Image 1 (cartoon, helix red, strand yellow):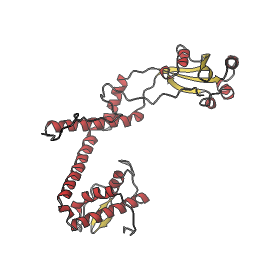
Image 2 (cartoon, helix red, strand yellow):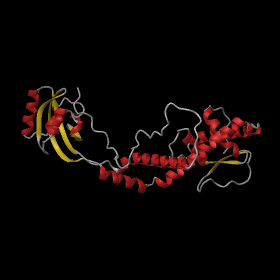
Image 3 (cartoon, rainbow, N blue to C red):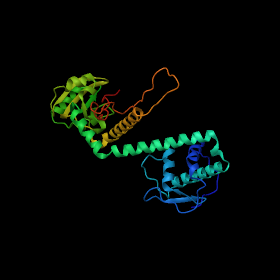
Image 4 (cartoon, rainbow, N blue to C red):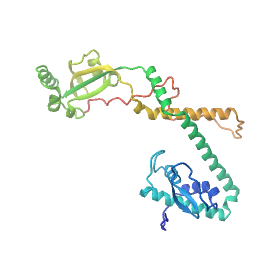
Length: 318
């Protein structure tokens, strides 16, 4: 595949990092090179040195163009654009070697830092891949299900009217057998629920306004409750169902569990490495540095269950 000659703006930071990582590989062209991994595909050559599909995908991930593990079709425009950038990086790196820029002490330090980052990333990836698997995710999920405290959920519908007399008139129609969803469409002034039959879905009482919580506290399925004063008018409710709060599904909890397990593995690895190394910090700091966990990572897997989806918004709006 021949690269098309044209000017393209390439991010300087990307070029510098990629060029640094490519220096050791440049100038070794010629001969047959084995694939970096089974199934990999050579997609271009620069002075005899192969560029592999995995090289292009890695660059696309580094630039944030695709996520880790996402596919990148070798026939796509995005693949070709990133491939052209990788070719440019190889050419720049090779020219830097010809000019002996790789011998400069500053370049040596930057190359060493780049090597450390790559090797560190590979160690982390290997450690995480071994520990963060489907069995580990399912095990933690089941553990959290046992520890989680569940509240009662209520499924209800509502009709909101502007005045108390209007609400009483609606209640009379309901007690005479009128369909709740039809009256919600005809009579309710709440735009958030009137078009779906007044349906509020399932919710726990603690997320509802005080007037709703008080009215629903002892209401039974099938019961009509109200009218009572709410923000913006008067509400009449119909209780459809009461049940134990449903746990978050495994698929919904999986991303958070994976993040937690990943962070946990990295933290344990670093603590182990630091405990066996002699680390001397030569500068003073106002406060000791601490590893800060991701905002959504549980601090203690035994205490923090996977979080449930956010509660429904308050049903009554002006």
